[in-house]
Image (cartoon, rainbow, N blue to C red; front, side):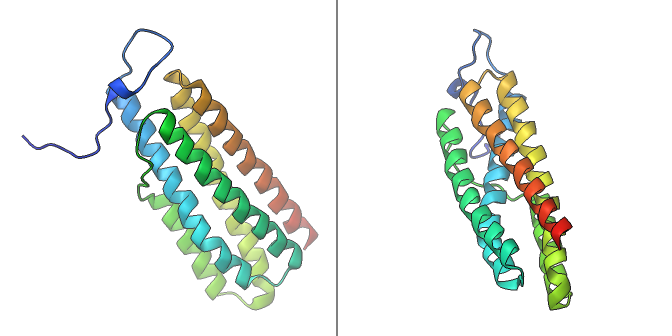
Length: 174
């Protein structure tokens, strides 16, 4: 029999009822959390590259604030992991990698003046991905009765939505 490492253990979770939480719910929750941690850490590394590539001071200022927000999201995610006694370990997320790769290629292949528009478009896509992912994992947490986690995850989803609106406003101004 083959044993997999780091499989979720339903006994770590406490729901509001006496019923045990289904293993597939736990697995989906843990995978989503790990994907989001991966996405946030990848963005922590990537946003400074965006900042170096932009010519717009308002966009650069927004990216600096976004970088700070991402750091806060990493801390919040790590606390969500702790509430369910899961080691905060990231799991490669193909969609995040695809979005960042697309953004990187766009920055390399556009003229300096057009690059800001490309960065804004990339940020809109990235924020939408993160907003949707945070909302999906918060729904899983809600079904599991993890109310503290739900609050944090919904807050992060709202942060992403607000950041997307801020980025769209920059797009309109330019």
